[in-house]
Image (cartoon, rainbow, N blue to C red; front, side, top):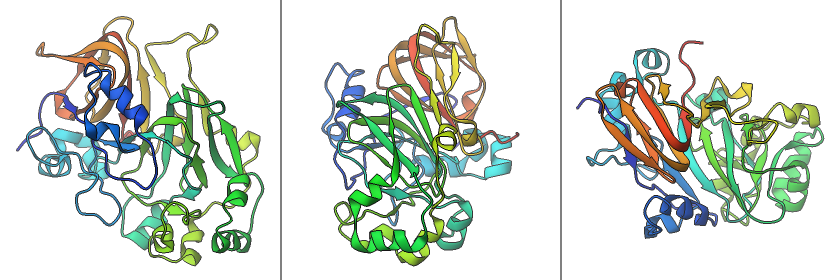
Length: 352
């Protein structure tokens, strides 16, 4: 079956997780349904949008099911050119090379990190590691914070001791604490130790895997093997970046994109730090006049307002706050207009 030639609106897809959250996802999604959020949208801190990725070690959990009943993964495999475009397929094959999540931290997440491509190939037989980025779309509480990178260079023995003792306060205090507000974005390279604080709601872009190596496993996972994904921590820690991330280096990961009097909104805002470009792309779209979108596989998250997507045939798709959409390459050039803000997430550019 060939790829559809129109964007597809997606329901929530919230596989069970080990931590609390989900209220912000339910509130966002219920905005487009008159306040009647489904039970599935009320529980679960992560919504995997247009996912062709499963939870680690699972067969289908995490996959997106299309309205016609097929898994998106199977639909893309059946027509990768239609879904992804020729240039993308020549570089990435039939992989979308992207996973997008809505992530609502109802509690602080544990200190963890992810492998890079080389480590993932060697130990997980995967083409992709797990570099990621966060776009902060909401916060709650008096001091919303994320944590990224060690404040001082550390040796492997010190970290091994922390992990063996499950010394959570020391592990967290070793990281840079970064206050965040809506509009901030943070690029998280593979290997970088990090955590998301309670009350932070993000759109997360990442490589399409579920490889999380969790230093602080005891109060979250309950099983040491789940922390190191069966590798043993001696091996897993070889993927950890133990270098120092000082203020200047940390600033290279962070962008502040909120609208202000000195930084008025343009129709298209590139949201992520330059280091993310080999892995994924994200723009905030707020059309002042009809805005042309080039053909591309994309995931759209409507963060506020109401608008329309129109194709060259004149077909119109109504957008509203809380919608999530997957756009096949075969949909062609689209036009976005209306009083709407959309986060457009895309794989890395296949050519440059």
